Length: 219
Image (cartoon, rainbow, N blue to C red; front, side, top):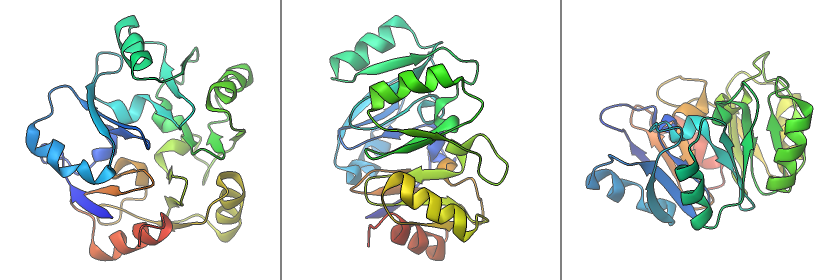
């Protein structure tokens, strides 16, 4: 299922929401009308903050095994997530916008080559997958350019076939290149997805939504 939404008029919904196949984390000040919009993800919806901020999609990334948190996250936030059942690792690296620097599903992941290799190993232990350091089109902030689930992935529209092939091997799923929000190539800013549904920014065209649906195997 594909659903197009915005957050207080902002189509870059990937800034604000985090989801996996258990929970969807949303800003604490979210209104009930937005809660209705995201029920298609078929998860428990939980109000949360990270680093006392509502930009959940920027600051965390994870899979069924665990999540990665920035060092600025508070003890209260960490304990809250632990009570939900999350194993977590607190990244001790200055590249702390984890949602921008990591893309992972339950089978594999890619990570910014700027993150210290020792820290990458700790993340691999929590997520229980191999993380491949790489750039996409020269960008080290790979999390901004790619979204992956256990059914598929979407990535920056300008990547070549060789990159698509590499990502298929890493994530062990098929995927395609596309845009969101009428031509925006930083797809994670306008897409929040799990195995059940993908939320897309409200500016996303019908053609783009079709491409996303194909890439994430939500047809």
